[in-house]
Image (cartoon, rainbow, N blue to C red; front, side, top):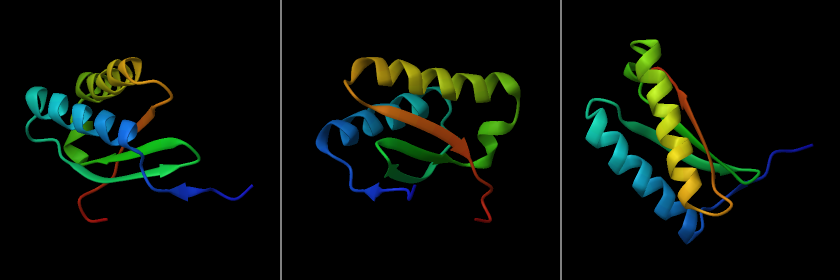
Length: 85
């Protein structure tokens, strides 16, 4: 099945903005490099310093889940990509 890449709706944009804000409060050195919606899931690419240790990586995922819980039908998938990409 082909992946469907689509634009973000207003609810998804609000969820991403809240995730960005909360991420900046806890980890100001972690940046969101790219965001896209694929098959209804919001793929969020984080800078590689989100992988500096297991606790930091866990917390970035927990933040995504906390934001998802506030918005209906929003699925955030944070992942890490190297700066070189």
